[in-house]
Image (cartoon, rainbow, N blue to C red; front, side, top):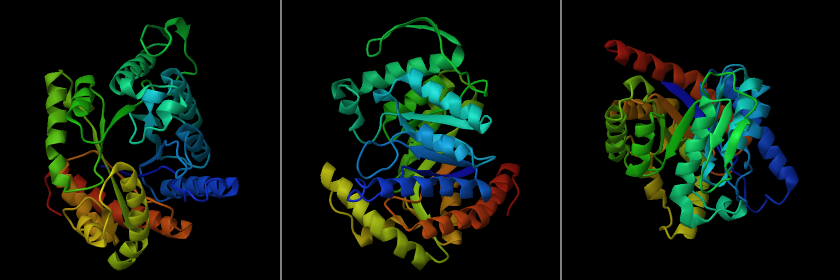
Amino acid sequence: MQLGIYSFGETDPRATHNPAVVAQRLQHLVDEIALADEVGLDVFGVGEHHRADYAVSSPAVVLAAAAARTKSIVLTSAVTVLSSDDPVRVFQDFATLDAISGGRAEITAGRGSFIESYPLFGQDLHDYEALFAEKLELLLKLRESERITWEGTHRPSISDRGVYPRPLQQKLPVWIAVGGTPQSVVRAGTLGLPLALAIIGGAPERFVPFVELYRESLEKAGHDASVGRVSINSHGFIADTDERASELAFPPYLETMGRIGRERGWPPPTRRQFDAECQLRGALLVGSPQQVIDKILYEYELFRHDRMLIQFTLGPMQHRDVMRCIELYGTEVAPVVRRHVLSAAAGVAV
């Protein structure tokens, strides 16, 4: 199993109008990616939002900065909001990242959990589903051929044009980000693309049918099972003790989920809810290294997934605490999880 981190460059929305604050957050984010590489983690994802509470609107730029400071870690978008972007430009950006990083770039394409990018880039939300389907089709075609002829409804046609640069990887990896809709799961399986499933609340076991549906869709479409990779993406935080992890993780959870909840009409989060989500069968991977190990392995028994990505900075946090969290993840959590997964694959008890 690959173990990694994802982030959206979370910032205090009250301070985002100060360019120095945003600049420092982005510098810290690159530091976090460099440390993740140093401690042997496998993947770092940077996602895209177009809001005052996030510093990253261009993941490829941040990942390119990180590529210059890393050697081995896979650099992916945590989500590229493909519906409101131009697939040609997305492909060029990540092909460039692939060259800079020596073949470590990936794209995770999704429709986005926020809608600000749609009016910002002149897209109609009534076309929410059609935009993604059409632009994903074009993105996948760009992987296949240097020269493109293509016609669509929501983007100007392309007539026998070359698209450059080409990535170092023979086929630039594209994952499909899913928040829990069966139609999106089936799309990923039918296309034979790896699935990134977000579990940010509720019992993870409720999502087992989605992974089963994905694997059924792969088989029904005639794809080899080896292409059917699954990533589970969740919120969490690691500290030296369970108490310290909760102490650090709860305030940003309360503030961020409360703010987003007010926008969407959700009930306000509570400490009781947070504590329940931190239990073994909850969605949050918050605790000491051993508690997080136990939760990752519990979810592995449910999903047999290929990748686990954790968002440690749900809201703004002290940089030193995040760096310690990453250190614990790479040096204490990852080796134990890898050993257990390898033993399970070999049928050996640990």
